[in-house]
Image (cartoon, rainbow, N blue to C red; front, side, top):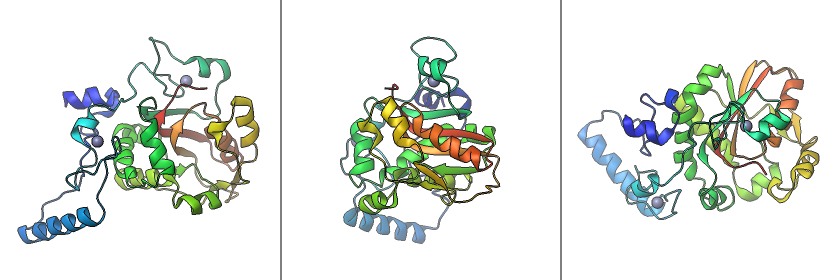
Length: 271
Ligand SMILES: [Zn+2]
Ligand SMILES: [Zn+2]
């Protein structure tokens, strides 16, 4: 328990929810079924070896989601953090400089990991076909932020959409994969039918703040005009300036959603 407290850095969300990096739901199965399962896992290991999200090496056992040694190196967001965006603060305080200066449309948000040090892993997850990382990353998000999402009263998880052509090229949308894992572990429904990408946008990482705002104007379109949801949480992989979340929030407000929160895998220092 003590270790869980240290690794998550989110005291109120610990309890039995430390991110352990192991599969849950092992359940009580008979010996025969167990033998079959182990055999099946062995075959899966041979055919589709699972890789560690941190170092990308093939894991020895399928039930492991991350190397134990790598798990000790990941940096969870620790207190004190900004009351608005969840970014860790250099010293005690309520808000980060970014949130003090410009504010946000969303109510509040939080992330699990510090982006620094995670960049190569997240790059592989987004662009390198490593969709299997979603299992570990989604589990960490559910375990560290799940209780908080329930406390916020969220009725749905809405992943940040990507343009269909980008999704076709990449084969998946990493935010959707994260939302699906979180949804299966928390029981909160995932809604991919509410908001979509409008026009094709340039990747945000190549732009400065002003260009990002322009790029995001009309980047999202609502698919359902009268959304019967009061409170939702947007699921994203990386939070930097919050401009994507704010742009989505504006569109969702227009469709009748009152309270929008966000949860991200990693958070970087706003550019
Ligand atoms: Zn590793
Ligand atoms: Zn902040």
